[in-house]
Image 1: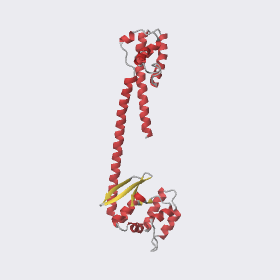
Image 2: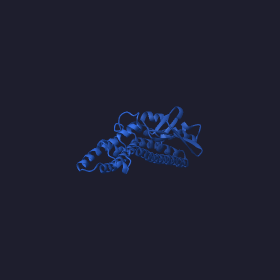
Image 3: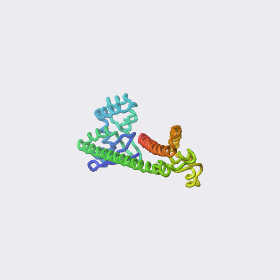
Length: 279
């Protein structure tokens, strides 16, 4: 359990998180009034009818399991000289969640900030004001830190996205073919398509990758295979139009570059969006 401390009028006040809500130490607040009798201070506050009405109303608003019958019983007894109420008794009888008693490392009585501010008001109006101001400063610091972390993560994601896409472009976006490459006669249509997409023939790939299993297409990315399938269909149409191989190659190379860029950018944007949604 994470513990945070703030200093209010030279008193150390402990704050802990319970179910994402801030709970402030009533024990520490009581010690500001009387360091030796903090339990007695708390009991005196809790035996007041106005206190019971306030913490009971808080429970009614926030706690579906609150025992309102026991609450009414305590409220009716409040004000009697013989009536006393401790935090543990209140919790045990009413199933209260606004006040909690902790033992061990973070021992003491803690209350939701709404209740803690009410207790601080009973201790001292001046102390309550300083407590609220210091608590607000703490929350502002936390918000500023979270905002800074979010901006840093956002900037880092943008940088990584740019680095990653630039690296991908260097690896798999087809190079623009030279006039010499375009005008070269390729033995098969498959090699012509390899040139359009990969920038090399199957033979050239094998010579450059002697230890790699499979052929150039076996080692292609999903994006490259999608574009290759499109190029095959487009090439078939161009052949039926009696367009010469060099012209077809130039057109297919241009199409391959456009489609690969589009596929890569869309793929990376989806990844970034997915990461943000999961956060």
